[in-house]
Amino acid sequence: MALSKDEELFAEGDDTEYFYQVVSGAIRSYKLLKDGRRQIDAFHLSGDIFGLEVGAEHRFSAEALGNASVIAYRRSRLTALIQDDPAFRDKIMSSTLRNLERAQEHMLLLGRKTAQEKLATFLLDLAHRICGEDEQLDLPMQRSDIADHLGLTIETVSRTLTQFARSGLIRLQPASRSIGLCNRSALQGLNH
Image (tube, rainbow, N blue to C red; front, side):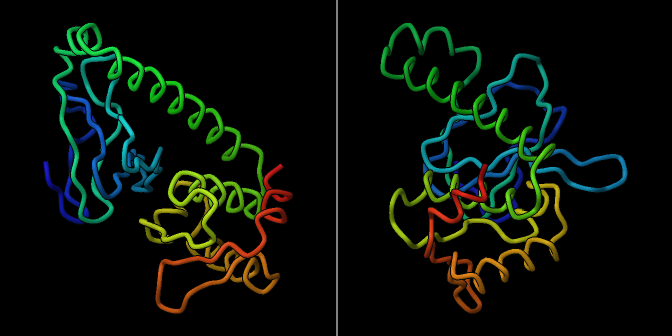
């Protein structure tokens, strides 16, 4: 399936008939709160499997951050898929464990970290997932998405990124979502 920017893949309450794997681009999963605020649960990047839930309905909505493509798998075929293809079974298992680990880290991040710690943790995790040891990180999401994921305001995200740049931790590219990671060890120090 090909998706364009902000196109919805599924909505909260939709039947969990399918689960998905990101082929290219990025997907955000989120929940709209009663007061209209948005809490982004996760960002799903190339290779990630998501939308596999216990219940009959999706608990979150999911939409593309930009142009993206995903593979849709029928949930009813999951048992056959993992029995017939050991590599796929291993992929499902490792993806499920990674999603659980990220959810636990996100819970900690939201509950007990300062804005600087939240943003440092986020940047390091995203860099690990997207570019490995490369210094250049091209963010697939906007600052408003980062704010809604970290439980911060967009102003706090922007101010903290500017502080990081002034301190020499990162390099911000003008009019771009590209960030140079200049001092990973200092960011790592903020991460704990």
